[in-house]
Length: 234
Image (cartoon, rainbow, N blue to C red; front, top):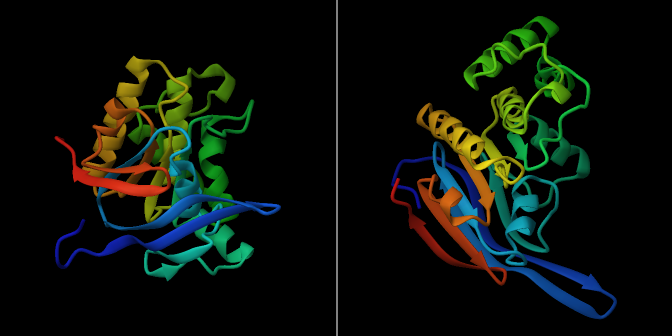
């Protein structure tokens, strides 16, 4: 859903994912196609078992499709090796997970610096970037706090700052408000809206319609198929 001249960050064409156990085949995704332009804010929504989690794993380079084409920022992802996928995950995708996935008993600063250290960013620049993004998400007074000293909403903010640290092509958020209270969830959605306004591409996986409505476009998946792709009221 992009206008002429906009660059696609994501291009998915006829993606199928089939899981096989013995002689039994289960179709998780069935010929799913869509594109997402640079700067879009998209929610991918569906109930449990719809195929949205499988799609998230493919978008994140955590799994590969059985057939079909997936291009991320112009690169074909579907045929990449494990090492190539690891590099794509580190440099092109900023992950925000429901469970935060932060290092325990480690400072907010060090958690945000971690992907940059793996990406061979100089230590001084790592620290500067980490402080910049922690400040951006409103944690300038929690930079040196350990993760176990933070609330759930604050931990998710650290995860968002970490996702931004490598200047990724897209932020991929999997049920980002699933483990936090509704008031904190609204704060996280406000941060995503701010980031999108600044030009960041955000793809959010959710089963909650009220959370999906915060995005500017909603793609709905059911029984492995794309059944709806529309602009939200935002």
